[in-house]
Image (tube, one colour):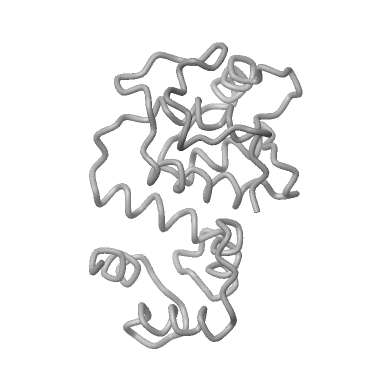
Length: 174
């Protein structure tokens, strides 16, 4: 489970731009869906589960969401957003940073970004272990049978994993 800054609810917060050093944005709030997507990405790449991500982990998160920052850009972001000067970014700081992402995203690109969060090893497929890990990270503790059912429902070719095309088809049907 993601540890969010004490007494801070990102859904109830009226504006992320009220945070110290927060960047300007076309729209100053994130939707609950965006927050959930970012929470999932944050949880997946907070490798030690301590509620903070390092510059290295931050780069992995941003690349999984379709962004490609340089090491210099990552260090600049850490320095700009690390309000508490810990050398890492907590979830609140992460949301401020990700709010810079353009609001109008191609739906196909968005599906690819979500797929990349689930495909932890970058193999191009999602296996039951990866699905279980991400679901657990976002607070969904599914049984092995429920994980198997999800895989079977999306796995059109029956090989036991979900490739991008199967994921996109499954994602679009809802």
